[in-house]
Image (cartoon, rainbow, N blue to C red; front, side, top):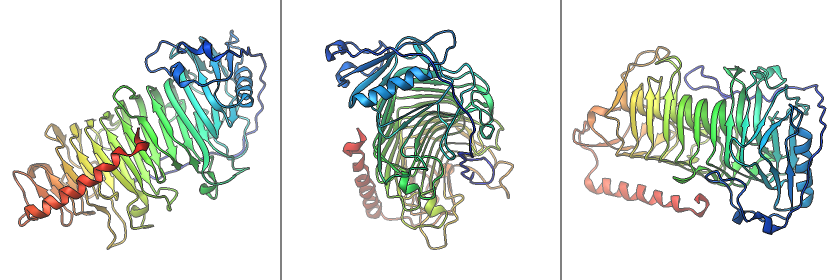
Length: 513
């Protein structure tokens, strides 16, 4: 996790020490093996439910709730184990009702569908404290899916207890609702472990607790297990897709760390996700040599960052990846006005920032987003060191230190490219109320709707002079009130525009479906 101390919050990730616990699981599960003809109807009538055309199941294992707060962990675990043994395409179907878990559930090589009867129809929750009896270094999670092809849909996970977990390192919160991962630290395996997952029509609800005010740390965690000495031994290779889901009240909602394969969160107007009352909506760290599409999502009451993209934060040899951040609505609110380090969209190429490598590892397009900043301590879009970013047609309004800020904290070695080669056009910052620098920022600096810091160079910006503070090098500002004298010729500008247009073509990559 990151803290909010210092100019750039430091990543502090702890998957804690040994846990001494035991779990007692009893009950039974009902199993029924149906023919494919029985799958003509969808599992629920909720919008966005996976339909029968996507199900190629050989067997269905049906689980009903035990009732009276009895523990359903054993029933669900046994059904998942049976589905793994049955092979590709099997389904674990939870009926309507409320399922209570007292122990964690872990499954390896599940290649099928874990389904409910619909959001708010099938509810998974806790009544007693969940007992995490796990090895040192493993990530505590209510559900842990290792490897496989995991398709999770049509259910609600609702955690209301202030202390649903049993580990003081997390304030006895639930560390993670669902963990998508590979091998454990005790059995590291090989690089690029296959692990794919889809989440569709799933609702996550947390509550008040002792972890920064929340009772859930992460709703969905995707990535390598724990804190290994060689994270490459734990890298995951496979696509992740999250659509039509709801996330309410947790410290983090989605965290993806060091994966290969397309990461799609939303992706289309009919498949966006909803995030509300959380410190951080989406964080993707070190997506290696792949594409990420984060689009058409809706964020309300975000207290730290809506979308947080870091490259080279842990794995400095990570390869270039492509990010599309498009048509998201993000509302960011500071708990402490004008002092918190809050942003709607935060982009950091950490390897350049920390002086580890020179070449950019992020290819980013941030376009057509609507960012409402409610008296926040920093910016709508903050960029540190990623090069050649396209930022177009975003609407940013409310009150903030800046609407778009780049190259403010860059500390890469002199002579290295820092935040370079951005293209900004059509961004509406006219309704943004820019306040003075926050109290922790000394000495005070002049703020601006678009702030090109000293670490910026070779930007092309279409905007009005009154909206721009340019402290960088060789930036081209084009507008009705251009404050620069002797900027590039029309031919040079045209050549730059062609270069940026060519960069846009990658968004038609087949991985971005």
